[in-house]
Length: 321
Image 1 (cartoon, rainbow, N blue to C red):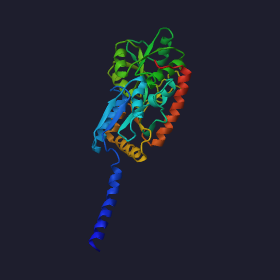
Image 2: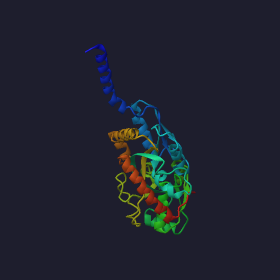
Image 3: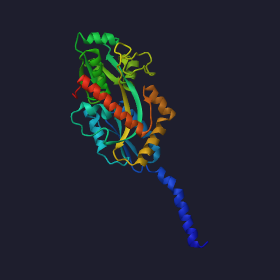
């Protein structure tokens, strides 16, 4: 074998060896930003920061960028209009990727067409909590109270599941509690603790520590079944409003047009992180149920939830405040 042939074989062999490594390094090749559509402190922010921390071992800077406003539409729209190269992702919520499509007359993005689904992350029931001065201790007592005096419920923004949980409660209970929207739960909770609003249907991870500390009183959870994180708190459905069910969910999306190989690499890395024992333990203590899966499963869920919440918005007459 002459020198040229031997050299060609060596080059070809090196190329073959390099193929798997190149395929595995398709993402991330540049710094990555995970957009959270609400201020720090809530479940979406917690999930984003866990991913950012655990993805740090992939060799690129991973940052979390909080872009709140308009029920999450500002941050989601930013991602929808970003480059589809895997460098800008969003922790979408039931609000940004299902409810807002029917709640707002004019949307800056299409929740089904302008994003590439990556994977479902987690879900949690909302916890109906009241200021300790509110005399009601059960759903029935709360309904009776709402029929005799004006009550208010806060939310982290119009279009969130926190908002729509309250609207659904109004519809099924036949009451009209006033919705008070805030630019994130960090602004709503001080007003709730101070008695300036009466209650909130808050995400379990945010509300449960305040209940355990005795700063707020838990009335019920919004899920169909009781939460393992708060097994002694009844559901709203079993407390007198059968059929009531509303959960907050969080999922990872990229801009539309993301290449399939990048999509699947991000999916695989997300599933790896969410399966880590310390991550599972932390999220369980916060009342977050991990439920990762395929991009196709997330797209199907997004479509189903968009239809479901459009019906709730129509029946409740909910409007962005």
